[in-house]
Image (cartoon, rainbow, N blue to C red; front, side, top):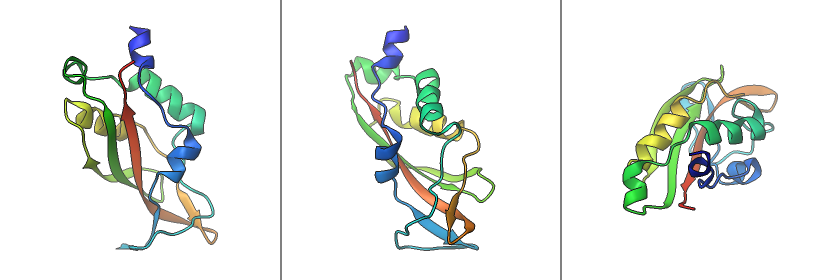
Amino acid sequence: MKNDKLTLVFIPLFLFLIGVELKAQTGETVEEQIEKLDVAPQPPGGVQGWTQYLINRLKYPEKAQSKEIEGTVIVSFIVEKDGSLSDIELMRGIGGGCDEEALRVVKGSGKWSPGEMNGSIVRTRMRLPIRFKLG
């Protein structure tokens, strides 16, 4: 069973951050342009914590396995100033239960470290790719 979990492909944090769309948000308005942050939001435990969390929690749905569904699910969310996540939604799915599983793990990931811009903590919209690949 442990090997089933390891058949998932995890994205290293540097690729995670490159593939993430960062939109700084001030107050209640959403900035539409991509901003460069001084400090990007981080999941609990950083790279190692995120990877370990995915290994322990992300399950490859049986329906997706039986239909040999592979691909990348993209989940969008806002990291609030207090590190909580809001506005969690599916941007691109692949079906077979993978979409729901990706949403579940993001929702359960806990508080993140918020982003910073110009010395201030900011709300940040992110897009997180989660790849499902059969081994």
